[in-house]
Amino acid sequence: MGEKTSNISIRIPDDYRKRLQLQADKKGISFNAHVMRVLEIHLMNSGFGPTSLSSDSGRLFQIRCEPYLDNVDETTWAYFIDEPKYEKERAYYLIGIGRTILRDWQVKDKATVSKEVGLALLGYYNRKGFEIDRLTWNQYPGPDNDGRRVLQVAEVPETLEELFEQLMSNKWVDKFVSQDEKSQDIRRGRPESALFR
Image (cartoon, rainbow, N blue to C red):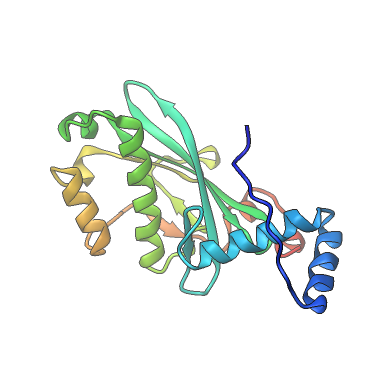
């Protein structure tokens, strides 16, 4: 079942309505769907709505995530980095935590902790000036591992709280991360001519 909705009536200048209708028609979606997307982007920009980050260059990214892997070695989430302005998925990362860390931290809810650590890492990279759609890690070699990062016990402090504190104060160091010249979707084959369409 979908989210609960409310019918409201809103008065907007006719010129705005026409512009919004033209944009909706161009995208091939309903007027209502387009207005909802405009509101969602505004809410992300103002710190409400779905998880989002604004880069130093002024780009807005929406982060969607879902569980990817939970086994004896690691608990990993998939993070989808979307650029709402262009309605494009720019990157797809796999970020996880090794089992020794979770055991040492005495974590009871591995899935939730792993998800929050991944989101905190993306926020940290963003604050460090990385464009989060251009991240790459050299932890695991090969093109199939473009965007894969699993934290191991030697890289993190003794407690989860310490890691969050180090990430928030930008004191943690990731020796595997770098920034590519191109966004991951371009590295994976999307033509640059489609980047801003």
